[in-house]
Length: 473
Image 1 (cartoon, helix red, strand yellow):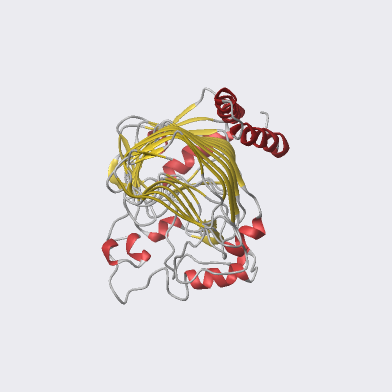
Image 2 (tube, helix red, strand yellow; image 1 turned 90 degrees about the vertical axis):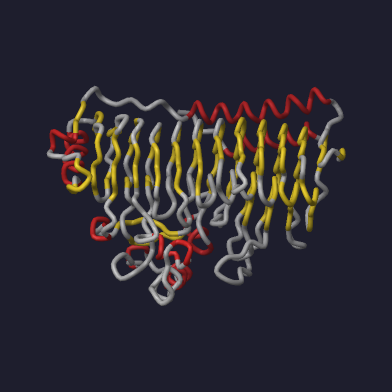
């Protein structure tokens, strides 16, 4: 596998930006083509995974498809036997199988046949012992993700079945502290002092992750699927629904493909796919219908992100449908180690409950950078707030001001057609000390928007053949 070096990709991107400034339309077109050739190289670097021709059916290990029997041990035994034999396929056949946490192992393809539904237990005890995981961009020891892999290689989850987290207003979701998700005033929630504030303090104080122990007695929800520090990961064809928290979260991973997956989950913080500290990621042919961002590229929160210091880069998103969500393709807000080289093409975004199409969010506590984002051939039916939103004043959980000035540069939109643009065509809030730099809109046509442009603290946007509400820019 060939990894694109920072220097060669940076040189190509700089060349592309120069070409975009030339007068020749042909040269400008060539620049865009060249950049997306780099996207194709990233895709080619992610190898097609192969597994030995061994099959392990969980029924042969004692699994019972009655939706009530806990099959954790049967699934664990099947995965263990597959791994110990050198790898292969672990099959979950049609039926309803209740389980606790599933731990993936190297060289194992966990395959859900059509009609298979994995029902995850709502008992917190089934996600113990605590494992090395993360919560909103900070590492800790917490309840295991529902599907978890730690430092494994060559792993896959495939098939046409469904993973049902069974999260609801009666379990997991109320911990977020919002009444619309079942929280009852006076109950414990993630914002209590012993939960997130304690984690924030530990991260800022550089307490070792092994000593940041949460789990029982705390209210921090588990992720749905988390490959942690894994290499060569495939997630293909399956459906995820009713997630406790973020759905697909590759963290510190290299060479990841998410192909043909459906995420249909509207709980709190139900982001669809959040690559974090990860490189060489291909998200393709997916459907995201979510309670939060459809795709959010991340790289750690505040001091913890700067401690890890691994940028997320070389990420290609294509042929996806974004329905409900806070944003279609988002960078941030956990972004302290930075994001670069993001390519988005041939996607559809459309819902009255989709807030933005492309979104970048950070602040001076997060800091970080976003650079070299290329978005091409996007059809937007409807968004609520903005087609493009860049916000360097993003705030949640109170004031978010610190000493780490973020930077955003080289954001390029090409051939974007929007039928109903919502409140803003382009909404940019940069900072006087850090102007948003080099935003270009080429062949972008936005209709039915209240305010075409709201731009603060940005270098002039470069427009070419772009119209908003019929007016040429």
